[in-house]
Image 1 (tube, rainbow, N blue to C red):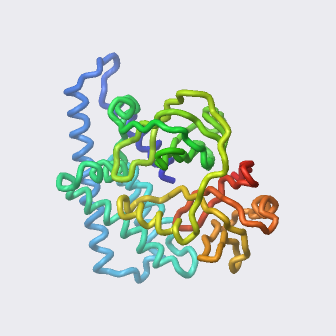
Image 2: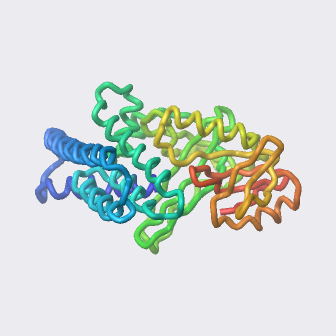
Image 3: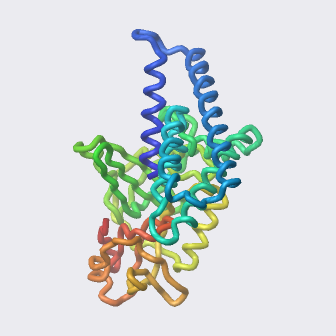
Length: 338
């Protein structure tokens, strides 16, 4: 979802700029600054309205929210789009989707509303925040950073980047691909996002999962630098099976990431020596220290076929709902799972 919101944000900004720019007008730094100021005013007005609504919910409580909540949140999401805060609009839509879904929906809703409240509060204190955290808050609101600026000013890390795996999320308007990388020498993580309109092909991968791609990553600004642009410097090469963590260590790594970016929704993990096992109505990857639940609906049979009961190394994407396997290794041979 984060990648979809980022693309929506970029399109919203471009649309706003086209609407405010006269045909044939040459790019003007002063005009761009004025457009940014007008957008900042719209965003601030939207955040104030959202804060007022959140305060009302604290006073009223969630009684009857299953009847009125979805329509109220849908209206608020539309208002955030009008306020040119598409990132917040997406967060409000996620909260709306939780209302009335299953027995535990009030707890899930409170979690979503808490993150929205955190965004609003951080926006109010933007000038007081460390620059990297302020960049993160603005990205969650929906401000984007131009590619040229990332390539010119972003932190640059050169390494042999292991392609841990990919996740492709298509819908009726936009296909999003997340490509997760890990540096062989630095251990740094990287996320390459690609987008394509529905029905069109994504750009070719720089390397297959389980291979090295030598290159330089230019990171987008933020408190938890993850998203980056890749400049490939040499052809891809074969890579050995990567080292990994226990499930307990992996969860600790995710918790540590939340300390830097509380809104972090996804985190790449490499689990070593784990086995797929039945876990209630679903499945999990387990070892002697514990386990990580697989996302509901994940088909475990390809993973089971590779494992055949033996421990395997698995790279995947973790979020609050569970673990999505991307690649596993049969010895040093990578097997793509998604």
